[in-house]
Image (cartoon, rainbow, N blue to C red; front, side):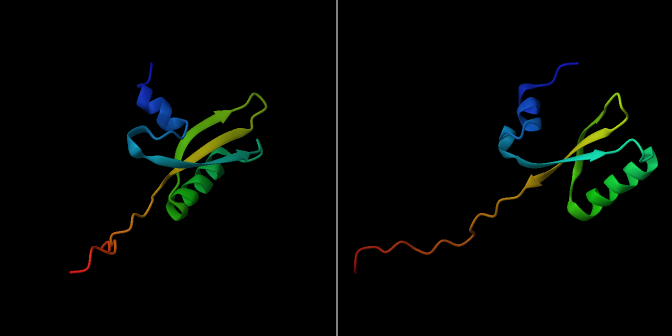
Length: 87
């Protein structure tokens, strides 16, 4: 299944559709059970605003997780008036 070009840019942190993403990589050792990893990721999502981007399970059993969240840029809502010629 192929992805749209915008989706590919989006996953790589590009500016697809004006959205910027912050990424965080986490590695879990094979000693952590699936339920423990899920619980830890849910906690990160609820308290940090992260969402799951991808999970890769290596042949040795380690899980490499990439989380992402939107970067929200604040734009000034008030701009002082420009100085014009004296009246």
